[in-house]
View: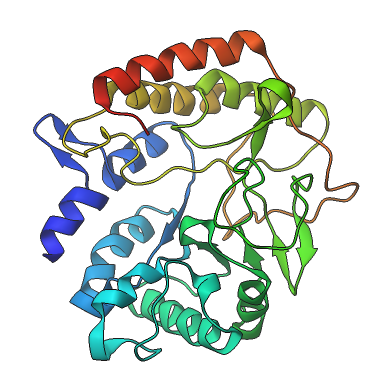
Length: 301
């Protein structure tokens, strides 16, 4: 049901409290931070625009940024309401350019109907975009995409950029803003997500960017990120990580949060392949120990 989906995936209600979007905005607001919420309008195919209003309204009211997100898996449940007929697919890249234009236009219009300002940025569900996605975004008037994730070697992303590209770059008619990453053991990369790197690793990456004059670093999270794997309990280890990070960001000199509404990322003025924070055996080891404990207590991610 609409309420069950909201409670489980957006509000993230548990017997120990709720740690979803409202809780996360409480922490952002307490520390003077601004966040970008990529909201998926596709559930409107099942429950109508009111389901998206439930998500968008509080975010806009509290001054955070709402941008566009799509999980095309919802099309399997849409029936005759689908804007692309019987076509389905796990990712938006599974559709033709014309179909992607149709899906993105539909999602944008629903997002605006739900009370969001006209979006300028997009992130594909599962990072599952391709170059046609970027061309479709340009076709319908969006300026930014942030579906390219060089830190995940086998992601669903099929955008034709080399994984060495780490900073915003013009590509296929839009500005592509890569998900941040740090160097891992043996030349690997680790993507910048609250459940994937520690607060210490994130702050070290930000210090590295500040020291080298690199303007932006994109950190990803989800509404349900602070829950156990089965979403039944609060993951206290990740919650503490999130809270430590928010508190540290407030105090970090020369670092501020920016949104696509008020301070969008700029194309890198120099080599877009520069700037990956170096590998730290100590920070990585501490994070692996923290992750092992979290996995044992709350389920592996």
